[in-house]
Length: 420
Image 1 (cartoon, rainbow, N blue to C red):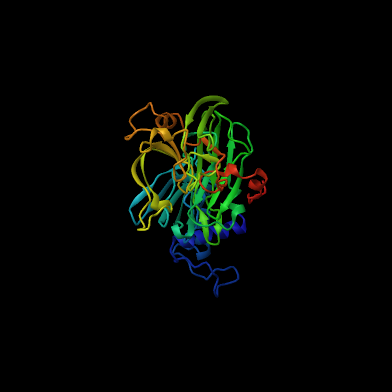
Image 2: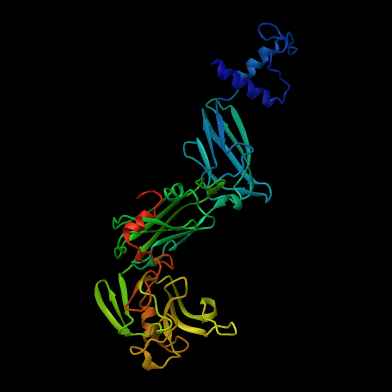
């Protein structure tokens, strides 16, 4: 036994005996013997040395250490042993009395929880191990996980397992502002089986979108990896996510609305599928131009003008339709492509009458599958692209909805914090 190892053994013995042993040579002889014995003719130093020799060679390390705060809830917690094998690990949350399930590795040298921990929770761990001679060692730790006020998460779209159109970007909205954008973005990776390069762009301290230069290739698979656990977004605020999300890209469908001719041409996988008569925004309330991605679908929904700035003199909405059929969102600000049962059938293909949406002929109740509104709804998926052209309005802003395709690629790349 080396002198350092022997001293560590002596410290362990002192801990076990709760202070009965006095290891410091305060006033003793040159050899540290204070002259006392254990009643069997052995000096105190001899007793100490014998106990140290009998100490286990198994050394347990629990991470985090006792007293730690702001511990991550994913991969920060682990138990390791050297010089032996773990025999048991018990992790509990005293406040709730619950036990955290975990797994010891096949070689017996490590342990970790099976799942994510709770935030703002105190946990206790007791770990035991034995060395090759069967001598036992035990270690304890008590720590607290990070609080919501000191942690951040990213809410992302699309969801795991989703099937989407070729225009669907990965969009992440963080619940707290990110000042250290480079650190956060460098721990987020999006890849595709198509091999397309994917680059992120920060629209704000709370929003990061990621996409390739061109639309996703049809029938590809995209994977998002969030490795944010412990990553500092801003001083004192750390990530708590470790997640892998996979979604499928379906067929390629791009529908082009021509506000001048009042028609929409639906093209799927490069082949014309259907031409539909439409009614776009009136001259007073024109429809945005640009590439817009379908982000939500509602068989029926309420549309109240007051929620998007169209109010009358009494402050009420200029319109309030409680059962708009076959509605699909194109922007955050309220642009939809939807069925219209209240307008005369003659307006479709001949007159632009809406408050900025794109209207398709439909029936009240959304129950007739033979209408243009129903057909387009049934044949569209989240992530499909609707392009509007020849409107008197400006091009929609890239951050208004999932519409980053309206930004030049060089400018998009310039908005990456990692310099991709």
